Image (cartoon, rainbow, N blue to C red; front, side):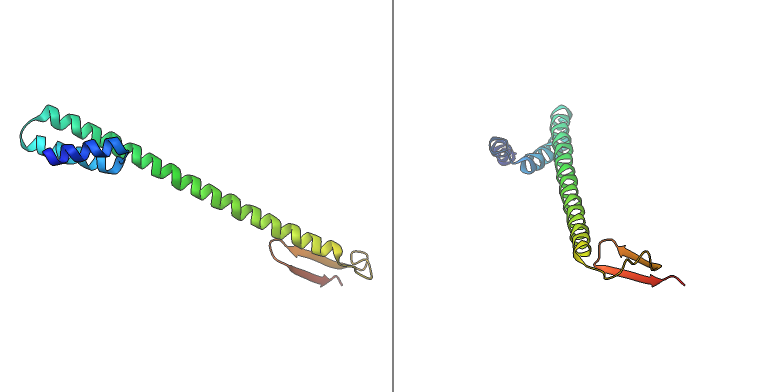
Length: 119
């Protein structure tokens, strides 16, 4: 038990939350085995709070990573669309396609043009 207490102290001093959580879990189990339920409850409560804190931190990190990924992909798609629009603006068609009954569409996100002739 002395070794676990020392490990707990080091973990607390250095901010190693996972190690601190594990030490509290071990101490809770040891005190429970010794029928020292007040001490077991204290360490279990500390363990549970640390576990909850770590879970929330990991969840927040995951959410932030996904948001960054989403925003990056969204901006990349916008860039592709703008580049495609710019390419089309620089194209010079010899005749006005709309007046000739030709349907012209852009498939967004790709540099693909679809033409169809209205008959």
